[in-house]
Image 1 (cartoon, one colour):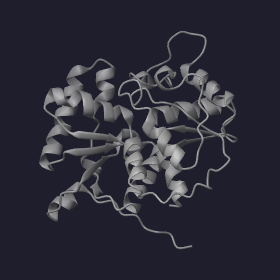
Image 2: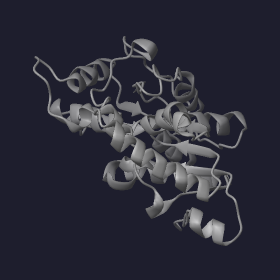
Image 3: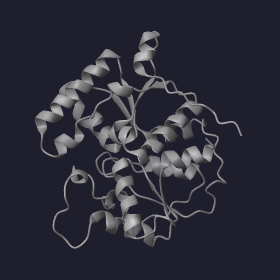
Length: 264
């Protein structure tokens, strides 16, 4: 079977051609540097191209939003990084941003306005739901038919921004009946990486948060744990390894599930 080539446009190339893309796809640190999450970024970008969405990326001009710096207490570094990003956005007249990370989503949406950065910010789960609602996704529901799948709510998408429906509706569109963990939506347990916890040593205690959350996911009997955040993916994957379940249980981002259901 012939493999289709997917080419992502860069903002600088679009600007040189006199074109203003409809959306900026913000890749984020994980999508750029983490090999596992690069696959998520690729899956989502392929879906956008498959659906004919007019978007572009910043490529090497993209830097960190500053979220980890602010969460770790370095306000000066956060503002330096944020103002640099805002200047880049001004240069390309960017007004609409799609993110594949809830932390980037939250920072752009709720924190950049204080520094003069006002944008329409969309998490990839919300954009996928938009594509579903518009009938742009020709999904093969047989791909995941009969599979048991549970969904872990990212804190910065759920509790911080009250978005619980979009990822579930996207999974339902793929023919999936989500098996909920006892703690879900606004009561969901954190993966353990938010608030810059990803970048520091564990504090004293009897159990890691990621281990307990993974145990809850495994207790549903699901063969796939769906996530929608790079932090969550890292922690759930670590939890599966700790439980020696990495061979029998998959951790897939919702973008990967949709890409597979589209056959791309």
